[in-house]
Amino acid sequence: MPTEVILPRVDMDMTEGRISRWYVDEGASVAKGQPIFEIETEKAAMEVEAPASGVIRDLNVALDVPLPVGSIIAWIDSAGEGEGKAGTSTPRAKDGAKDDAEARVEAAPGETMPASIDREAGPPPMQAPDTIGVEDGASASRRATPLARRLARERGIDILALEGSGPKGRVQGTDVERARVKNEGARTMPGPARAKASPSPLHCQWLRQGEGPPLVLIHGFGADLNAWRFFLASARLGSPVLGIDLPGHGGSAARRVSSFAAMVAEVAETLHAECPGALHLAGHSLGGAVAATLSRREGVETRTLFLIAPAGLGLGISGDFISGFPRAKSAVELEPFVAALVSDPSMLGPSFIKATLRQRERLDGALEELAAVLFPDATQAFSIRSVFDGLVIPSKIVLGGRDRIIPAQHAFGLPGDVAIHNFPELGHMPHFEAPDAVARLLRELMRSAR
Image 1 (cartoon, rainbow, N blue to C red):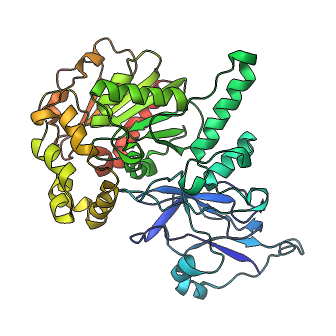
Image 2 (image 1 turned 180 degrees about the vertical axis):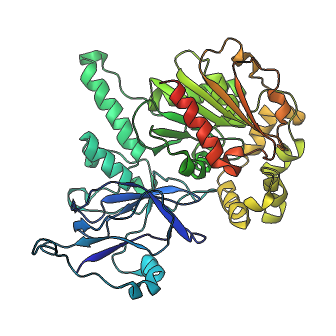
């Protein structure tokens, strides 16, 4: 019997999604557990695996078209099926069978759940569900994400030889990339001079694969790298994308720093370990200040600089947010601080607040300590204004006119060759409030460096 390939539900609020990329062609042979397409929702982008082995048929679904959960988007014929007279095909189920499609997506035997890209931590805001380690064939003794398995195949790396950095030793995409860099170094550096790849001091993940110099994304105060997933669904980037957790945040919560300069140094060391060579830098809020400083740091070959509501351009910052947000321990306490991030508080509902609280459980006071170091007495203890003096790389700054955390006016007075895009109706998170518009600006900037 042919097996349906169904657009799955990947979070409780999901009603539709869109296919952003097919990994296989019509008539291709696929193995159960093999990534066959990438799905994008309002919250994340993730790979979906083949629910069975066989030959995939009827790939007639267009890319980037919204589809309801439970839609049948392809079929997989088992060996020998669909092989008959020219012009004939195996009979398919009728549309009436779709009434219980959602139930089949979540509960059908053998149904493959979608895999988030290199997810290692618990469920922070706007994050895809955890990867399920599917064990197949020669890799039966190694747990690995679908992305890691695909990268290992493409790069000719033995996944069984890798040490996984994920939960229960699961091999992540970053583990494969690290092995690739190490192998390439081994091929080019002879004998005793051969350098061993240094581990990254900060937690990071490859959120996208692609061609060309990577885009490095650095989050803001109180967030982590997963906060970029929603924006990436709109960005439509062809380049690789690396997300980094700043010290005191996400997977780097245990890393504490005593100054802004020390934070920048740890991010620089992570870049040297993960993606040496030319790159694009983008950052939000505190991450924007880090990205800007890195763009002038020796040893970091920056092609473009893209900043969203960056810190470090003025003295003032919302004291209520800086002191209250890290200390909020319940939904009632957290709600007003989350509402201050956007111009329309309804955009960040109860699910976002609940996920933020779950994320907060792992930080163990790190945010309070960092706030005291970087924002004492509701002031910004560092400045990035000098970065723009004589800056020769293409750069853009995106602001929200209704930003209640960092006044948009801080960006005024910068050199004229720095492009400033002010959205008067948006708040502190323009990339979340207007992702398509901000993504277009980012794509334009990255293209300008080619």
